[in-house]
Length: 409
Length: 122
Image (cartoon, rainbow over the protein chains, first blue to last red):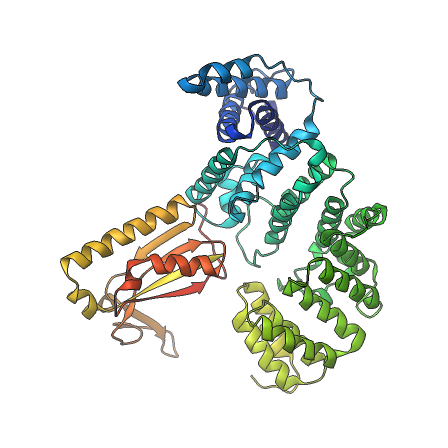
């Protein structure tokens, strides 16, 4: 078997996604698990056959094969025999450009169904839409392959049980929030991998961006989809500066901005500028606007903190003041505008309501260090070190603690 | 989120268990493993030998020194663990409560978040 007679991995994955989308559109989401199994079987068949007999229309071949496999399974199910096989067999061949946009969106929405647990949504999306193998997903999360396989099986079964009517394209927008949230979780999880971690089989950030581009193709008018894509591109632009030459995590204020990826910044910024927000901008667009302001600043001092603070206030408003992490970020911006004392007092108030909020002591320690209170900063750093579950962040906080002037460890 | 559930055991307590309690303990652990596997939350479990089997290796100042016996002498010791991957801490606690040890006076479970994991290339 020679590698060059087969499509590359990107094309395989694209074909898988489209074949599944077509099959689900034909057979209905109540048969999602059978559809996904059929596509996997067709893929296996293609993988064996294509090196010697490459089809003229790979997608058509894959879809037709998957449809036959599905029909075989459906036929063996006596109760559904007539209805199913007739519907599937009589379905006309799909032209390459037919209804692809809506079908991708359909499968994404099924995978991100709000009734599924988050881990099931993410695993199923990576498998059924991004086209990763179970082994690749297991490697990303560093869990056994059987664990991921089981999550996918459960999620597929649940989607089929839910078997709701297919969403119609004109109501796509209102069903898209769950998809956005799953893609954002996927993206942020990519940055939780610690320094010194084993190399991963797949780049979750790249997958999430790829899927969000796909979603934007389906919903070009959605300001929140555009916002999420811009937010991802702008965050990803800082990736080259996240890890310093010594392998240590570099927090935002210590990053070398000359390393930021200008192409990604330009694309993200243009996206934000092009979007005309509705009466009320959504949370992803607001966060993208904040990220764009950071991206265009030369350094911390010349950043437009007034504007960023104003945007965080709107963000708190549209999320109903229900997200303490957003409030913590707003307090960081507030420190730059109104000074450290105001911010520190607000952190105390926030902590009273959310005593275990991640990073709250890291932010406090940083502000105390800025305010020239090394003893108090040291004690906040120690609490932050104990509270974090991220190895790279812990190392960074230890470095900051050691760097405090006039404090002996 | 990955969590390690450490099982703290006390040999004196285990000795006193009735046959019925031992059966419940065995079946409870089997049921726990079956459920976490079915839900895609199970990663691994291991049970450890008695601390009398332990060796402790520590620096003597001029290189490693090996001694027999446990690191700390105590009535209870870590008898084994479950490694799970769950949505959040609340779910981890919920699972730990399902382990039969949680209902036997004198035994206990400790839950700790995992910060780093490498499962090898397997």
